Image (cartoon, rainbow, N blue to C red; front, side, top):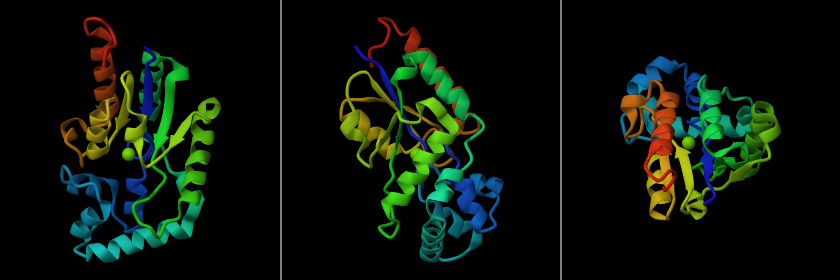
Length: 206
Ligand SMILES: [Mg+2]
């Protein structure tokens, strides 16, 4: 059976949240301390920290994203653990079977998809070099689900949907998801999950 890993970008490899918070002069530490598990919308967290209307914050985020366009997405910093995650996936299924899988359709309809995709492609070119063409951009990740395919993602509902559609998942822990207890070292958590799979009786059978 072919083994494939689909590796999400935002929230797994790419630190977009801290840079959004910076637009509102909120530090990474403040942001991390304010997330609630199950709360995926950053404008709600920022609204709590700043005691400002969530709708206004959301509009502000959309405005900035539109204003900066592809350059913003292309210039986002990788998490310090991004390389460790990519290497662990490569060791597990082979470099040829690791794909970058990202949703380019930002939740607001006011953000056009083109610049987001361009920015994400440029990010991959810059940070993954030879592997930058191994991407799947889709808001419908569950359509890629099948036996032997593992999605590594930080968005709980996407993981559940992927599993329901016949795939497997490894969550990337974050303060805003159900695996928040491991959010301080997501790479270590993912490496351990991959190790567990490796040592499961009968080998890979997920
Ligand atoms: Mg994500």
